[in-house]
Length: 554
Image 1 (tube, one colour):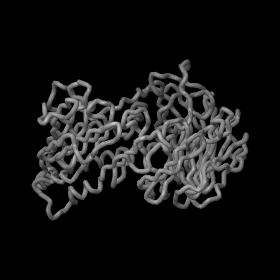
Image 2: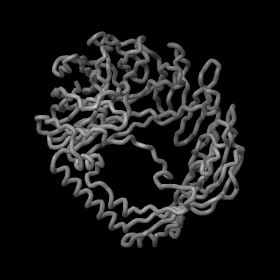
Image 3: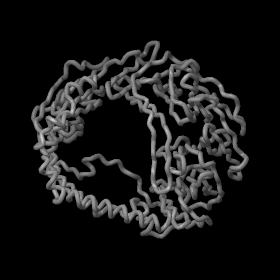
Image 4: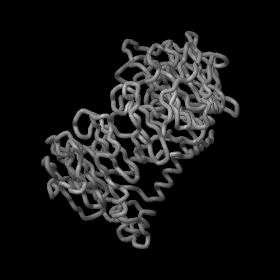
């Protein structure tokens, strides 16, 4: 389970488990916890939970300066002072990760991309890190100096084998793994973003660099059962249809949308030509693309909006002709956005075209002192399978009401003050966990007043809500209202709704940490072998150490 920790103590839990099992039913109460204090060097970052020596117990890995340090777990817990090994990568530019695709036996191991040229993995025997073994050399990559977490090994073609995604200068290279042999690299133009991060709050300041490979979209675009590759940059939308020949993907995109040409055609924003009576008129310069099945044949089509012009391109098993749209719809007014939703429940997604009323400079000056409203309208064009109706079948109106800008500013300042007061009363952090194996709801863990408080089955499973669901949309209703003032009045004072829940209930159990928490945080992760979450509490940090307490369930 990755736990991202930026230098000088900012700690946040990643949303996805890297490795871990399913919860087991049968527990109905909070288990006992064994407490173990720990300390890490102040420079430690990117803490990761995974079993690296295949003994059934998860180990802790963290980057300390330019070395990856591995703390091995035993039946008695961890020995943070002595029982660890370190990997010195031996390169100026290193991207590292964990993978179970290269060890030969399916066990998890450390992999690294060295100077963009060599991919290696590090076998681990018991508690000893062995010399690295080469996965692939002579790679056409480039990464910046330093040591960073980099997800460069991915199963691109969904065959169960880890492929390589290698960043370069203005492009990425994809090497498909063919039973241990890698196909010649496929080069795709894409930005590999290198950015400087600055995180500042009351307790920490951190400056560092991160390198990120863009997330490649893998979908079966032409309904042939094979995953195809979609690459989206600021300049191009490229689609590579999977082939059945010598290479999985073709060397060039099967079809490509020139986004740079679209933007040039729409024009740039120019303050000298701005219509101050209709500021929302700048929406005519915007565009969006939707690549999905529209006509119901299982093959992805393309919906392209350029200002108020919407073009529908039909896809086929072999590609798409982007010169000949199947249909073009034109709308007046300020077109805000489009999306596809089956409004009439006939199995085909209908076109929703959203427009916003003109907003003038005079309106904005009025809103500084007085409340206001903006009408947003959706025009619904039914889908008959081949094209959309030329005229909308209905109109849905959303009235967005909001208080004055001055009141919004005052509400923000008041909320900040109340949050600061709450924080001054003591450290208060929350996280969700599974501590007793219930599948009905998650448990809530709270760090408050130097205690861990546990509230069982408190967090209901989250439900993804689209905009229409959040709006309370109904086919029988055409008019809706969103009141920003009401939202502000109901916002949680703590900034954490889970903390408000905790303050209104009695904890199932409270655990005294026996330590004064000066600047802390907590996360939940499966560390031992009982398939229940354990708790990691970070209690303090200074210029030399990051300190905390492990609560291992037993």
